[in-house]
Image (cartoon, rainbow, N blue to C red; front, side, top):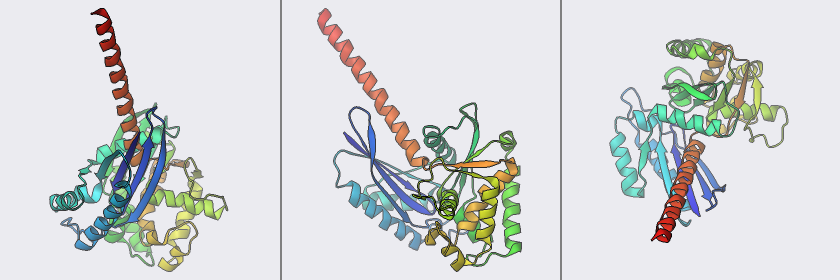
Length: 327
């Protein structure tokens, strides 16, 4: 039996999932934790991780370690994404994490992050032909899936935190700032030559902002277990209508929206712009939401590695037994 812990250090939040993997290959989730760390906050043009954000992140990682260190036979996989990937003081930050916590963070390239998103989605939802969008705090990953396989993937610097800080007020959103940021995002989409190959395909959404869209709609429709959004579908009309309601509110109004976490209210408009514009750009009529993404993709990769290891081990034992009998 193994406890497989995955830490995902994002630009807005740090998350950990611990999965117990039994010897027969079956598995179950033991623990899930999430802390809003805003690691990408105020990085500026020079892309410097700020002391306050680093300390929030260290505190979260300490909490994670306090939990997984109490378990037996722990295998830890810790990854960092856009904020750490872009940081000019990345090496100093990584060294501090390793020195203080004995946690070695693997900084994922954007394309690898997108690949893990695909693994997490494709193992748990029908995704034969679709466009996967994972919107984080400082980047968005897009995967074009055609005939059940990855056709193209990319990571672009569009996230809830950096779009908000660059273009939007955290309180009342002005029409001019909304127009400016939406023009910018649309220009980014237009620069991705292969994206139009996803025309009319459904979107599969993951990441905190996109999942919040699903939670708001489930609460609005009085659906029990509103946080259980895996496989939940919305029409483009519903997405546009919800986005319009969110944009029309000031910060206090957004905090009062059922299904919207108050800690996300200041950045939710920036976080939903990539989704609303992607559906419009692709003329997509629906979105399916996924609770599986990066961490689950890493888990599925690990499960396949364990399975392959067991196959090789059994083959070696069989060969050894055959050789012994022959002798």
